[in-house]
Length: 212
Image 1: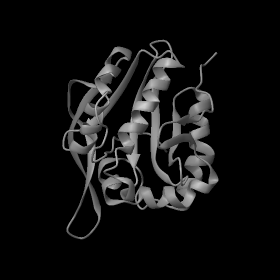
Image 2: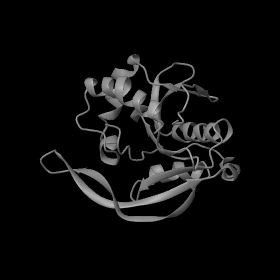
Image 3: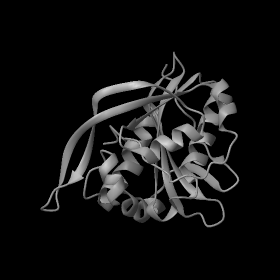
């Protein structure tokens, strides 16, 4: 029988991580149409409200039920405003490993929300779910995302050459794909001791590769 993640809520000092719901559609749509999100992820552009509804109502539940991953809305504890997304993919229940991605809304960047959410998710995975490895992949030029990985205690394991597709604006205003390298990071339970310092950062993005 396939293992699955539970429908859960994770709380931190400033944030609540919870399942996506229909009320998130407007904020999720706006966040996914941001220029930096478009550049560093594979989210379709332009991103529509129907795309958000499909993600929330179909894709995310199917991924969780099949045991492949988990999609969580990251919200401010006080305002309940959507500040970002955390996504788990490529989960291997035998190895007890999964890949972690994160996105932060433009207005919420620079507050350390990506680090706080990623760290809380990793602590939950290692504690409650008894996972043994969390993996991150960041584009070689995505320094903001690399800062998040470093701040939560990740160890850089190496480079996957020419394995990432990012996007850039052309002169006519359209997006075009460009190839770059992936930096592979890992986080093990014993690495969390390295995340004791300040989490304030410029926030970042890792690739949401197969969301649709």
